[in-house]
Image 1 (cartoon, rainbow, N blue to C red):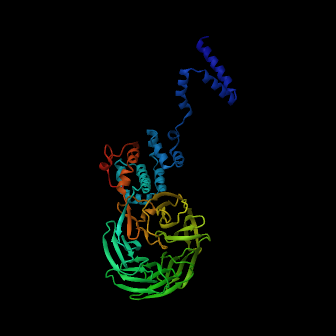
Image 2 (image 1 turned 90 degrees about the horizontal axis):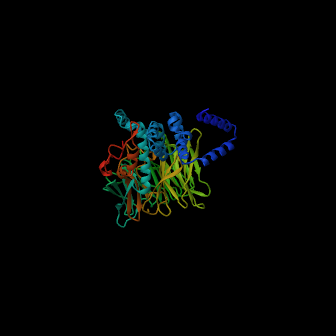
Image 3 (image 1 turned 180 degrees about the vertical axis):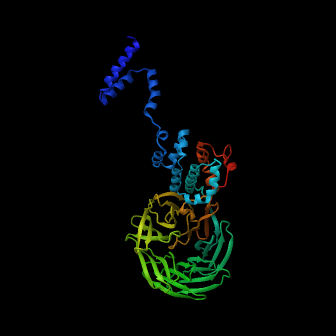
Length: 527
């Protein structure tokens, strides 16, 4: 019998005996064989094991299952997966649904971006330059870069001396019709263009605690217990609304109908009818227990019905009245005994949603809450609450949308926090100079562009668009604007070069090959 046959018989006998061993004995046998092996055998084992042990699930599993598995990874992990191998990169970039979901989850307004870029995307797809996955991947990257740029200041530019009023104190400001409007202790209201800061109009008024504009008129609330109306074209005083017994600190006007609301330190709110030259008091609401610091017309109003909100620190009321002031129904929201309302915001794109901030003095904690009005069941319910994790921060909500909310803290530094409503987390902090003393109605700071609160639509987002304005010191207003060129073109540079794809393969973007950021800069709106 040959040595080879003898060896084979010996191996067969060993394998037969090995199969009858227990798992622990098999492990002991393997450990013994490895310990008795020399360098050549160990090297052979090292080369052999990866093929025996490891399985590349990305390569062998169906795409549907791969997609389900990859949904457990975040965006940064998926970007790293794209660098594992060419096969992984091709498979991951054949799953546009994953990248679309990531872009939407990060805060991109995917539907708006798709609608506004459909023709251009179709052309690029036909030219085999930009894949569908790359479209959503870059949407995700731009969103992450913009949010990260809010933290480090790259996404915004702050003009710390946008308006200076010498020694006069600015008491209120508002952003309306694309302009910034200020009220000042020198008894003037001035309208400024943004972002260039050009003075457009000055109207001699009185002390101003809050103001609203329509296309033809300026309405002001005053510390002298009155509200006034001024003609924008001529600057002439049009009418006075007298009836409160203390300072009026809240005002709102219904542009489509001749009605106005006021809220006062005297703990009342009033509904007024505006005639051609006179104003009549329609109704006084006396349910409040503290200063009425906010009033707001909202919800669909018909010819014979009005709907509006009045708020103090303890109680918020949604009123339904007829044009004579008769109450047809109301929703009352009372804060918990150990808390106080600090601010309210009504969503312009959803008339049945109200956001508010609450402050618990004893715990030194703030919470952002969302209330939804249910007309069919005649109730208003709280369906969202996010406790702001920063201790001793008394927060004020400046704006909210489908995706993001912006709150401002009023203790220590007056920074802004961008909250992801769906993920219930703070995604960015905007560090700013200290503001002037915040008024009860929050009228010394205003959010300007709020379209991004529904998600970033990069095809519509523009550089130098104003984000917020605030009073600083006694006589200065700062203005923050978007800085998209630096944020999206420079900060996103390494991601664009490493992760964009062409026809399933990884290539640097053609605009950036061998170029510096300045040389390769494109339109920062991306699309």
